[in-house]
Length: 247
Length: 60
Image (cartoon, rainbow over all chains, first blue to last red; front, side, top):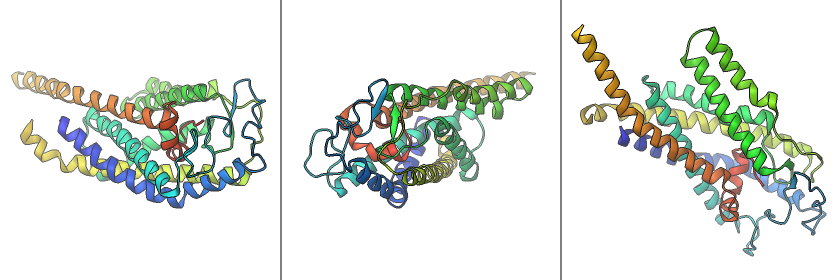
């Protein structure tokens, strides 16, 4: 079982991580690069917005990155374009393997047969849990957007994902009205509490670019999750007969 | 009756066989996602910057 879970997740994560890196080059990355032109525009002084102190951080503050430069400054984004692409691909693969491990563990724990087709449904649930639900409170952000305190946003994101996962589990894997209501409450709760929002708005990046990025990020995430679900489901099913002999 | 007892014992065994590796996979998966998406280290942030924005992890 160890080998089956880890083999499935590793292959699905590697293929999915490399695949999504290629797709990002056409969807989200051009918008990030475009936004970074505005992020630093009209302000060689990166501390320009540091007057927003109370729980507000601005992306172009002292510790943030600037547009990709090859000077290797502390706090800069990854250097030249190729280096940046390789780092992003590495981070994508690690994230994809991580998500694939969680997804495959859920396949195993469900005790239900999963193949490529049903894997897509699992992947779509992952998209709803990790991308769609948190996006309602914390929309995907371009560099240069105003945002609330990072740690608070991270805590809310984590709570939202955990609550949505628990809610979907209750609604899909348990039966009865009580579980259904409990599931709806769990999914709604993080949004009733509310995500941390910035006290001021009005970053340098035009809203048209920010809006486009939200759509691009969500579409890319949907492709990623369906692909990961399908890949993991396919390899999960294929590794089944060998496992039967082993166990 | 005996068959039922054997079946439920086998099911319990299968559950235990699944539980340990599945929980380990969950923990390792969470570690990887939190490491690339959430770690506050500047080095990791810079390397994973575009990934964090694309996946809509809270960034900066």
